[in-house]
Length: 273
Image (cartoon, rainbow, N blue to C red; front, side):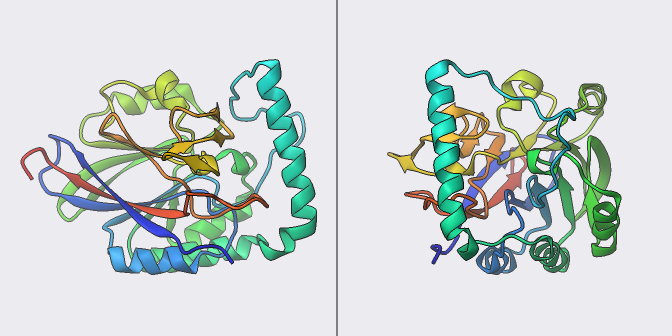
């Protein structure tokens, strides 16, 4: 049985805030049940819930444009390939103990939306997101930000919130970055941070994807799908504004070692708060 999830808390400051907010970060649910994450959400009482990718499983057709990948040398490609086939083989034997179902994800979102406003961006497992899923999210009261942004007011605090999808729209991101005010960006891929996002335009960037490295030694991630071996952004708070969740589920047959599933709670404060 999977170990219970933990609550991880970070504090992020922005001079643009006039009052503090509590923001919950949920990533990498992968259509799994997560009752312990929901319990942590209820206790945390966030003002906003940010769901940053890989909530559902909806893959692109073969040959379609997919998210950007990192090039590996031959040795890394061998290790990654060996790990993939090992995990695939183990899942054929043990995968029934860790089933996925879109209804699990929709139920999670339904319950979350009763607690606080929910905003969701798309990850690499959601490259092809059907219209019926989009309609379902609207019915649940979840706002999907697919290379799109919105303006909202929470507790009297005005925010701009955007979602950068795995198949990203650079032109939209540039337009969003130039807008005024306090800006939060949901971006499933932390490896996009250096290439696309690392400037002063965003006050808070929320990411996932790495699953914490699956195995951690001395609190260092060993491997992630986007960052390869010993990824730079394996989970934690970076540059005082990039929060990377270790994820809410385990999709691998092998256990997560020294790497519990987590709900991230960000205390988002003004510099004088």
